[in-house]
Length: 179
Ligand SMILES: [Zn+2]
Image (cartoon, rainbow, N blue to C red; front, top):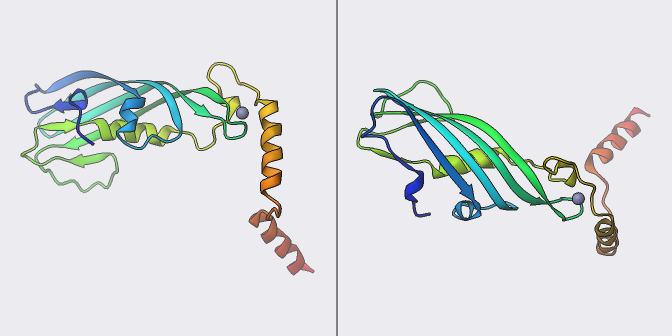
């Protein structure tokens, strides 16, 4: 993906102290990565970056909405996404003993940072695994009954031989072992 200038922080010329940023993320931003099952995303990341001689520390605060299709009835609903994260970039190749996935080491020759992949990562970890109408922003929604019935009819015709949940199968095995 081509780096886009609005997500690049040229830190080399900045004074020590706090610096503030705002980044808007929409579908076009995520298309540059691998947009995973959502649309109509409108997210805002506010960031405070503290700089000193040895490191840059970003405090990211994300808030906004995006739209998922419900896992059960496939109807789109709005989801509020919120989260915070701190990212640490050590300057001048300073080696660190700490093992931390949110800690990065920058070489002395580096003078700018592309935050885009980090912003994408922040969103990816916040995305829920399950996506259901009940999670609709502001007011939980009921699943679309008509749609559920249609899907049930469809999957019944598709799935002639339902397999047993492996956990039940294991439990059954345990029970028969007891006897
Ligand atoms: Zn639903």
